[in-house]
Image (cartoon, rainbow over all chains, first blue to last red; front, top):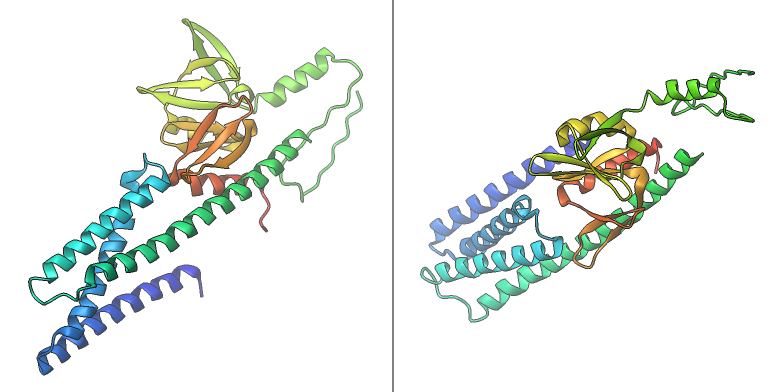
Length: 141
Length: 152
């Protein structure tokens, strides 16, 4: 199976899983008149949307260094997460550690992302230097 | 002059070695014909046109819709847009690394990463150019293609 097909399948699986999960939990919530389960899942969905949308703003921040970009995206995403919690507070009582949980969840993901990006840059630099040395050696022969 | 021709289908590029005792007009003519294959650029300096061999060019820069060729310690204004030059010179070791620069990979001393995760190329004359995030992968793919080795 080609790589592109696996990618397409994974996208469809993710979309279907999201719709089915949200749909069934919402259905159960309506039947049993308890929205807690749905709201927990809905928050996760909203935070995922915030995270993905924030990451996809990177072409707009092309002028900035990657480190500054990651920090700005992190701050923006965290503010949006807090905003979603604040809005959610009007509809249900928030847990006293809700903001801390939101902060922790996003910080862990962004630190992992930043470390991955840093390692990738380091590996790319090594690879590019090796290729350059080889190309230049062939040219000198 | 004795001439021997070898055909080898496994070669990745055509190659010519010339052994000579003394440079003669005949050899110079051969060199001239062979070098015609490599494009040249017209550089302008104080209204005067100068032919630049692309081997001399370290990088090409564009400022205010004007294009400049940077040599070791000289700068010449040249004709053509950056995208035109990018396309025309891609087979000769020139690769776009950001919105306004095309670099000659044979003039790169090394690639380095900075603390802020920005990648830069350091040229043989110690000038530094930023590789933008958008062109990072393109630059790497270009090097891989120029190296011409399919496996890692």
